[in-house]
Amino acid sequence: MITISTFNIQNDISKFSKEKVDIVWDYLQKNQIDIFNLQEVYSTFDKAFSKKIKELSYHKYGTFRFTLKRIFNRINEKTPIITRYPVLSHRTYHLPFLPSLLKRVMTKVVVQIEGKEVSIYNTHIDYLHEITKKRQLKRILKILKKDTNPIILTGDFNLKNNKVIFQEFIQELKELGIMHIDAGEKTFKASAYHRAIDHVFLSKEFRVMDIHVVQDIPVSDHFPVLIHAEFVK
Image 1 (cartoon, rainbow, N blue to C red):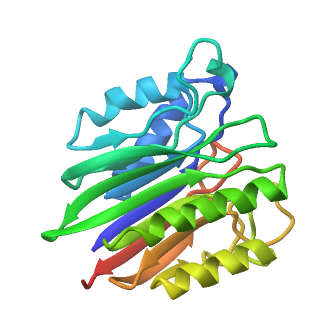
Image 2: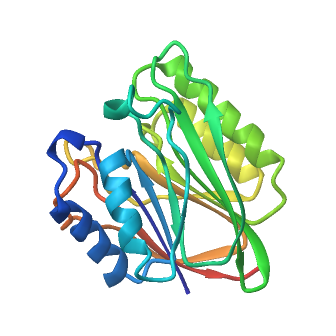
């Protein structure tokens, strides 16, 4: 069984506390998560959490959206992939972002699961401009179409599944054999609708056993999504 979770931890850098790091770490350990994909990870949390994962056999990859960390520290974020599977390669893609002023990235890690290479992707797309969202989804599709490995894609897409551009994205991924796993519940706490904006996609090599939105994590304005799946190859 493979345990996967995606979680936007909320960039509250001005309110950073060790308690938040401990709560996220406890969630990771308690659920024995094999692939833990985070969004809105900022510098102080990243540094403290990196020290935590050294306690166990986890690997963490992903770079910040801006290279000038000190200048852009408040708005600088990464979308790291944390896993205990053997890592074969990794890279960060910079997604198109104009007319928005905030860069967006997607992290890729290739791991080995049961002797098979699997590509894991994690992203956080724009929340302001429809045209930017379309461009970013198009870029993600282009990248995934070139990938011949089984795929896990997660992230905060800032789109509910009733939005036309997201429905089109879901359909195009389905044609590639990559399925949207609907959480069936809201993941952004302030939402008035029971629809997720944090999403998980799995290719046909995975069989989902269960999925649920974890609602007892108090450290973010999002709920994490937790999935148990089997790798059927």
